Length: 240
Ligand code: SAM
Image (cartoon, rainbow, N blue to C red):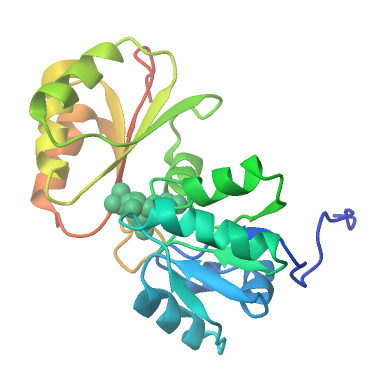
């Protein structure tokens, strides 16, 4: 592939926010650009300073870290935007994957956009796109709904609303509810609906269960229910 002109160098620019994806399990998935930016920004805003601190240490990087998570997002976003406006370069990361995708990041990016401060994506791992790309389910269009709420009635209402959906549905689900969710899919969308349940992607126990909802549910229950899961539900008329 010929070298394409790039929109930013490997050196952070003053006053720029970098939205940096980090691995979702396999440390080799940190990109060269992410590593360069994380190694030289003035400040790294992260969900958990211990998690990000130890990841950076694995790469021989040492930066000032500031906690930016669900519980302090609103006030911290404005404070970080002030620091950007004063000329600091900042990278935002989450514990794993792409910030702002079912993770903190959105409020900081919005605060920057509102002030016309430059925001630069440094793309990389993201669980939903990794699973979609390797699933064999239709990917021309998809709806990513993040985590469904825990309340059963809301989850059932969601499945009923999208029963006849023409695109693939993509969701994150916790290990505490994955068995229940697999049951709900069979019950509300029928045993023949094609699904993909992917577990521990890029890690040692990476597993893709793909097929009819009832079969996938049974295989899921026979395996380990520990770890991290992505669920895909194929369009209503899709056959494998
Ligand atoms: N921002 C992250 C991303 O880009 O994918 C997602 C963060 S969200 C808090 C965490 C959820 O993502 C997990 O509960 C799981 O549903 C999904 N996830 C993250 N890593 C995963 C992996 N290695 N395998 C499967 N699912 C994963």
